[in-house]
Image 1 (cartoon, rainbow, N blue to C red):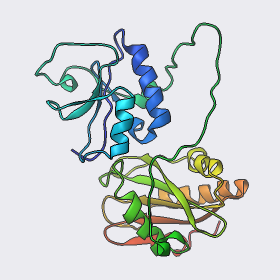
Image 2 (image 1 turned 120 degrees about the vertical axis):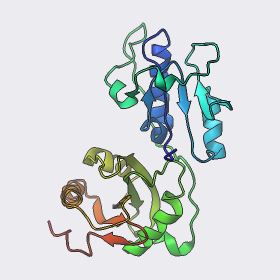
Image 3 (image 1 turned 30 degrees about the horizontal axis):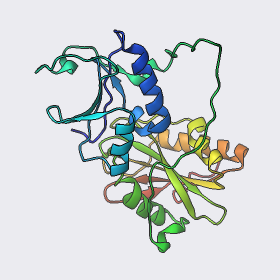
Length: 263
């Protein structure tokens, strides 16, 4: 098991609407889990390499999940009850990423189109010592990563994970967002997603961070290009990009200290 959670569902039977509705709730309430979603079989499964936090388990139960001891996973039937089977559905049904289903919008309810009221919610609390609250050096950002990102149940050290640290006007940490999880050596980042939470949380500045599973923190050409694009986007939004710190094992490097912030 690689530490990632997988959501597994079927889209070819009467449970399709229930499945799409559940994925929509997962995307809204637990975005880190939804981003790892895969679709197969007739149920939603959540697999954890380490036991989830108490609040995560409570949220899963609220969404209708139950613990399947035989398969070692949290499971949701999506309204379809089937007899127990010794066969693994993943070996029978095709696997489809939930992100590929994003364009398949749930049909509108009778009575016309409805809108939604949105709010920002905190996924978990990350207590930290007073000395770490000020994030004005790459070393402090790296310490924050090791304490609050690397210990997160959604974090997968075998893949590149992109994190945005949100800072106030005095460079103190307001919080962070584990934005996206990529593959072994690739990650997809867009300014829209990078600054969305920063805007909503009224952050004055951000520190960009991601890890290299290889353990070598030296930036690639793609890392440099993305960083400069995000610096320009932050200038338009009046949200300063203070640094881009790449985490290796055990070292880290700062693109600002390497001179790549001259745009």
